[in-house]
Amino acid sequence: MNQGPLEDPIEEAARIGEAAAKKKLALKLLGGAGIHIHSASARKPPLKRKYGDLDYVITKRDRKGVLDLFPELGYEANERFNLMQGDRRLYFFDPGNGRQVDVFIDVFRMSHVIDLRGRLDHDGPCASPSDLLLSKLQIYEMNRKDLVDLVALLLDHPVEATWGEEVIDAGYISRVAADDWGLYRTLQVNTEKLRATLGELDVDQALVRSRLDELWRAVEAQPKPLKWKLRAQVGDRVQWYELPEEVRSPYEPA
Image (cartoon, rainbow, N blue to C red; front, top):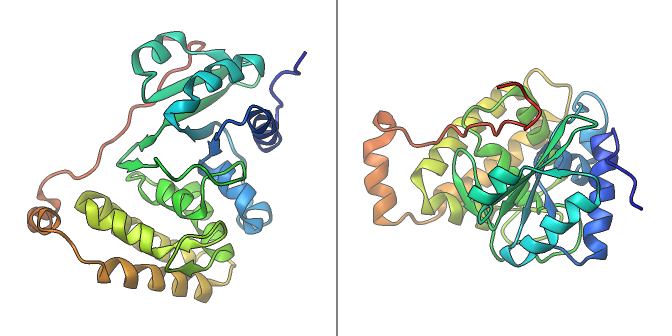
């Protein structure tokens, strides 16, 4: 008999990761908890923080396995949501700790759409540093916790031109930004917020700034298609991002 969900979200993420690995499910952790596992700087002041809900991404082939996995681990499925949205997203709830688990299928959809197909076959419990960075930088209404997580990620991972399990892949991020002007614009806005927040933190600011500079040199150098250039001419006059709605837990009062 499996024990129920653990109170500490990082310990719980490790438990979920081990269970998924045993079933050979490519369940990859996103968000602040994913960055905590990838980045030592997130585990100590001034960047250490508390975590809440857990976010994951899977490939469509693992959908059935994940629908079986979480109830086995003591979670309750949000049956209504999973019936209506289950081809692209699944929700589970831990009533004991009041924690939600959000599982995206193939594509991460929040303020923007990031297609993660073909990017989840590596070993380890987390999405790559590049996808962790994108999943945070794409949030239009980014808060201080998101900014702190991004600083930890940039402190601990060099920016390089190609994919690596422990690097931020500037080539990949540049291609994604060149495919969608709206995403590019949000990355641009949030990078400026990140630079402004750096001055308030007792970290190696020069290192983070140099890595941001390196990333943006690659983003700006990437050739942009005509559709991107046409949308850029419209600019901020038309909204370029979504404001995703929170899914209510079945235990919350209406």
